[in-house]
Amino acid sequence: MIDVQRVYAALDVGCGEGRMTAALRARAAPGAWIVALDVQPDAVALTRAQHQADGLQASIASLPLSSGQFELVTAGHVLPSAVDIPRALRELRRVLSPGGVLLASADSESSGRRLLDWHVEACRRAGLTDQASRAAAPSARGRFTLENGAHTLSRTFDTVEVHARDDVLAFPSVDTLLRLYATGLHLRGAPALNDPGDADALADKLRPHLRNIASAAAGPDGRVIVPRRSGCFVARTL
Picture 1 (cartoon, rainbow, N blue to C red):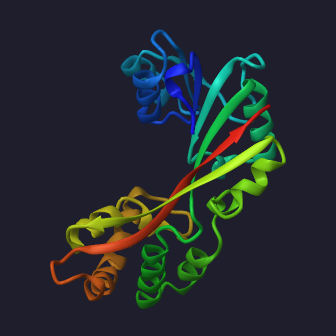
Picture 2 (picture 1 turned 90 degrees about the vertical axis):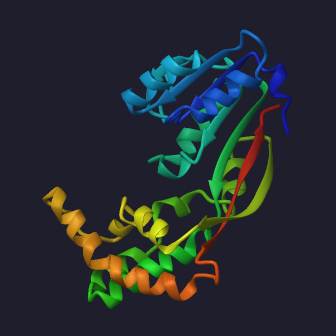
């Protein structure tokens, strides 16, 4: 794919907690210049402190960086959230040196669909038909997926490869799945909530229905399996 050990300048866009930045620091050439970028200042500060990287708070659509500086740019699951994806891709190409590589990860349109379908059904059983309809509607992440990402990238980059992987989300028990569900997945399609307690109340209303749905799908060992398909695009400049 790419010999990271020969990379001396890399940019991690959407660094988040710094997992990719840490991988770049561990695998890139000794003394490589690593820049961790995110719109969230706390993410930038944390990654900079923990992974010996330069930190930069900025938007992917307007990178305050000179052109042609990086041999490698990584964008882990951040392009679907870009307001203007073509503009963001032009910026990523601009900061790449000739022959540079963009690694952009994305999910399949069907990734985790089983859990979303269960949520929609839980909303219906709870009588929240409007939330069910909104939850079932296409989301922003569908703007850049394994299915359409290569076409989008090919408008800006010279060559694009797709590397897909089939995996699963394996929950050891229904209770484990419910704990994840109540951290925010239950809010998919919900109206604006005025009070923090409203989110907890909604979780309490939906949780029994999701428990029944997931329990019916659990295996003999109690595990709950949700198929997941994800992958990475390798986009190159000439």
